[in-house]
Structures are given as structure tokens and as C-alpha cells.
Amino acid sequence: MIIAVLALTLTANAQKLGYVNTQELFLQMPELKDVQTRMDSLNKQYENLLMTMQEEYQKKLQDYQQKQNTLPEAMRQIQEEELYSMQQRLQTTYQTAQQDVEQKRGEYLKPINERMAKAIQEVGADNKYTYIFDSAAAAYIAPDADNVIALVKAKLGIK
Image 1 (cartoon, rainbow, N blue to C red):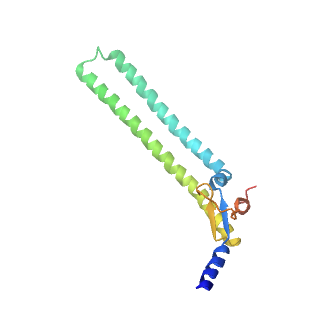
Image 2 (cartoon, one colour):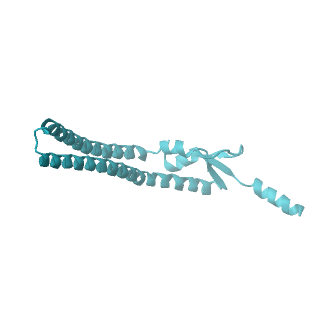
């Protein structure tokens, strides 16, 4: 029994622990600049589309407000329905834009996250780490754990 406890203690002590701050590492990924450029471009396209739609709606609304007292009831209803339809399209386009931007952000960031995860795994395997913790998410890091961010950055080619 004492031998089993001693063996277990020696095995536990033989574990090599490391940690890396993935948020810090993520912000240093060179691909992030390209993602930001692509996201800025996509956002600008949607902003332009929505601004054009909003201007068209405002123009139509002002025109309607100026003429509403002189229009026959049937024409007034038609224009009100048209304004309502424009308002609905504007709202739908805004929601679609938000969803598309979020989807694209996920698509663009996925390869970066995968590359980071692979580099962390490789550093762990290459340097015989039992565990590498994410210090950005961990509540406690053992005092004898090694900060491996420099090794991961070297693996990723980041200076």
C-alpha cells in the first residue's frame, strides 16, 4: 500500500504543467489584421446599403407627409402600405446584415483559433507537458507551471 501511494505521488510530481494566455496570443496573431480588414469592408458594404435604403425611405416618407392631406383615401393607403413595406425591408436587411457579419467573423476567426490550438498542442507534445492551461480562463495556475507563450509564439512565427 505504501509503495502504491509513493508511486502515485511520484507520478503526480512528474507531471509537467504549462500555461498560456490565449487572449494575449490571439491579439498577436498576424492574420488578425487581414480579418479586421475584411470585416471592416463587409461592415462598410452593409452600412452603405442600409444608408441608401434609409435615405430612400426618408425621402418617400417626407413626400407622403407633404401630400397626405391632398391624396385620395385609396392612394394614401397604397403609399402607407408601401412605406410600411419599406420599413419592414429595412429592418429585415439590418437583421440579415448582423447575422451575416457574425457568421463571417466566425468563419474568418476559425482558422486562427485552429492554428493557435494546434501550436499549443505541438508545444505540449514537443516539450512533454502533461497539461497546458489557458491562463485567460483559469482561476488558478500552479506555481510550478511554466508560461509557454514564448514557445507557442515561436511555433507560430510571431516575434
